[in-house]
Length: 130
Image 1 (cartoon, rainbow, N blue to C red):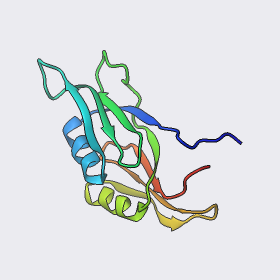
Image 2: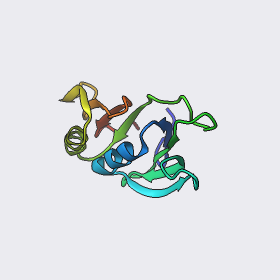
Image 3: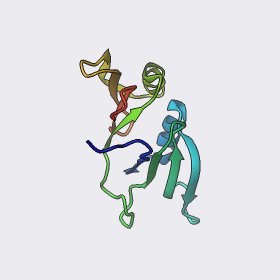
């Protein structure tokens, strides 16, 4: 078995509505590390890095013809957090729809899934693969 301790993942995808998604990401606990916008059109995000408090984070940009991430959404991610119920509830309050309710998993831990306002699939849980 491979040791994954110390691993950091930066999940990447494109978004259609950057204002909607940055508000949603903030609501569930991500913090802005860096966001670079087009000088001619500040609604276009060329590259953004948003950190997760427990480590790692996401990178995203506006879905545009010349973008490196164009067509990568909808995406899917599993977010490990010590309080998955709180993040799940915050995600729903910020506009996500429930895909799978929070439950105790047979393999250990607790988790559930939502679709964010753009249709990306997010699973939240406290199970940390080792």
